[in-house]
Amino acid sequence: MRSEDLFAAEEGVISAAEELLANGRFADREDRERFADLLKNYQKLFRTTRRLMRLSDRNEQQLNAMSQEQRRANEIIAHKNKELEALSNKLSKYLSPQIYHSIFTGAQNVEIASNRKKLTVFFSDIADFTTTTENLESEELTTLLNRYLTEMSRIALEYGATVDKYIGDAVVAFFGDPETKGVKEDARACVRMAVAMQRRMRELHSEWLELGAERPFHVRIGVNTGYCTVGNFGSDARMDYTIIGNAVNLASRLQSHAELGGILLGHETYSLVKDEVAAEELSPIKVKGIAEPVRRYKVLGIYDDMAEEGTVIREERDGFKLMLDLTKQNRAAAVEALQAILSRLKE
Amino acid sequence: MRDRLEIKATSRTPSVAFDFAANRLKIAGESYPEDATEFYGPVFAALDNYLSRLGSGVCRFDFELIYLNSSSAKAVMMVMDKLDAAAKKGASVDVYWHYDGEDDTMQELGEEFGEDLENAKFHLEKMAG
Image 1 (tube, rainbow over the protein chains, first blue to last red):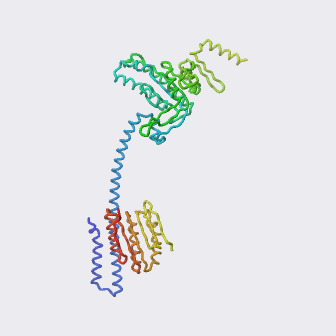
Image 2: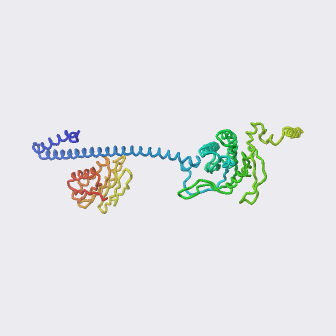
Image 3: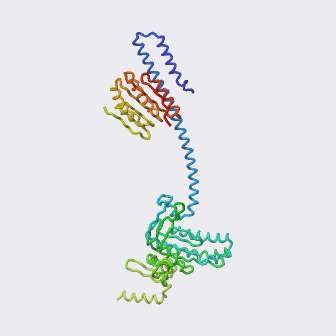
């Protein structure tokens, strides 16, 4: 319906009133003037009504256009978000989940900056990886290496490690940043992780032999706790979230001195975990850049695991602590020692 | 009487700059207040007060509105009526309606407002830029 038709009745009233004003007979001049004034005001009100209606229609039209535009913008945003999500999923595989999370939640700025923190640093490396795999085709080598790194990363994630990087077959990880459960718990989690990795490695030996590796792989692990500088290093264009410092170098050295399939701890790590980790101190080693010989500890196992296996007897309560390592102590000697204690107790 | 009435613009209401001493009054911006009476009430009161003393003085009123809802349009028409009434009483009133060159509706609206003025002088101006 045209707007003219909408107002046909009002326009009819105005025409009739105008005709009456032109030809009508009024009682007196005053009545005529009142009628003329009334008509004028009616005409004005009519104009106002049409004007407001037009304005209202225009505004509604604009609102609809804006709402359509908004819908289109939302669709574009949703599409872009999906693209961004897919991209960020791809990118996340190049970052440790903790680092990824802290960057994407805004907890950490992507800028050249660093902090000093006490971290427990983990280094692992497959002994003689190159010679062990030199006869393999590149596809086989890739499958082998990826299988190994996938397994190790899964364990690292399970224990809450921040995987810093892979250097060929070597894995560098740390505990204590960007999330920490306290220095002691971080160190314990790291050693538990190292033990779990070695256990898994033993399980994987047969699988790898089937895949064509001539000799089973053995991993050396070094763990050390100390102050490190952690943060973004590099340039504004390309940066790496990593750790540097003597404590890091020492973890690497400990790894290179570890036995095949073994875990070596630095002194501070050992102090933090000794309540739950059985370890044997080995002769100190000289390390480049450190004046004093470095104390090192070979991990024998986790007491809880050893107790389950029956190689350790542990009893702990308030004011009483018993730890019997049957790998070091034969049963007869242990019984003798305990009986001596019992006799003293009964005195 | 106060020399000025200044109201800063918000996302929903226009700025009001009434410089009574200089006889320059202006309303600019977007107008779709939640409550048009609440917003325009003090504006009308100040304008009435000013116009009641204008006598045969000179006054310039500028509208620079980009968007207005129906209530605001009614308020603008009421301002126009007040200005026209003051002109009828002898004041020299100039009303400037500034419109965005790309907004036909605001131009048409201005033209129609101008047609309603019988005594005040009306000027339709395209906004610069």
